[in-house]
Image (cartoon, rainbow, N blue to C red; front, side, top):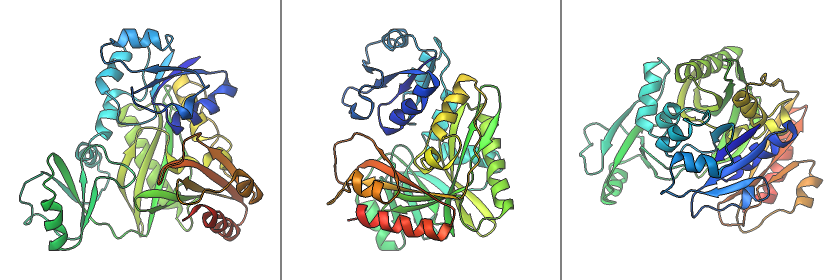
Amino acid sequence: MHVAIIGGGQLARMLALAGWPMGIKFSFLVEQDESIQCVEGLGTIVRLDSSHTPQQIFEDLGQPDLVTVERESVDVVLLKGLGEFCPAYPNERAVWLSQNRIREKEFLRSLSIPTADFFGFHGGDSIESQISMPVVIKSTEFGYDGKHQWLIKTEDDLKAFQALGLEGEFIAESWVPFDKEVSMIAARSVNGEVCCYPLTENVHKQGILSTSIAPAEGLTDALENKAEGYAQKILEEMDYVGVLAVECFQVGDQLLVNELAPRVHNSGHWTQNGSLNSQFENHLRALCGFPLGDTSVSGYTGMVNILGGNKLPSSEELIASHANVHWYNKTPKMGRKLGHVNLNYADLGELKQAMQAVLATVDD
């Protein structure tokens, strides 16, 4: 089996590392200026040439059996074109929906899945009469890890945003006073089989995921069932194949869906060491039509992201703290995701204590 991945970042790297023991070989399609450090030595790397047809790209990739993506910011026309020569998962509609926050929220509303209140507007529009503060303004396309987002609490905040003179389309979302940020990692195979991991609690710092703990603490079975129901409804309506992340706000006994990610996801990295089968393995199983792997967990698993900063822990330090270390082979840069560590404990209190010790070595 040969799988081509559009993208050459850490997610592509971890997919390849999960697939090698399964006998899968890989190739990678990357942009002209994209770093290939994460995937060097893991398969053929092809630079995207805009003058090439989908058939030429398919040939350059070595005629893969399947194509998948590691990010949603891909050309859906290219994805559809490659799909004429081999299956491409997830399908272009699923990726297209997730590329625009308004489209995504309208899709969720069409399925009666609750979200924060929102409205769309264009730069330069007068929106004072529509806003009920606080709101979060986001660009409808692009933007991740907190980029292209503005928290508007006061009229002065709104004036400051308007003074930027930005053009394009934006979405204004009501601020949600959430109890927890949680995510559901789910997979659906070409055969329609679905599996879900336990809800994961996520903590962000400056818009970037800092830590995850699974299973999330203090959530009821009813909330777990609700999240699984939302995920299954989305997967089936999209005719989705692969892993999908459903990011939610938990407010009491309610879940509001915030965003979808049509790919393996940072908040699912804990599955590498905390579940019988990781999200990366199950993504590949789903694509290839293999039976989906068991998502059972034992105890609690925590994930801590390692970002580039003023200090960088050594592997020796992290291993000494009984952490499972996953480096991405990236050049350090301030704020860049360089790796992560996973920790497993039977006791949640002990896990949190161990995570704090790791955070002390990675935080500035």
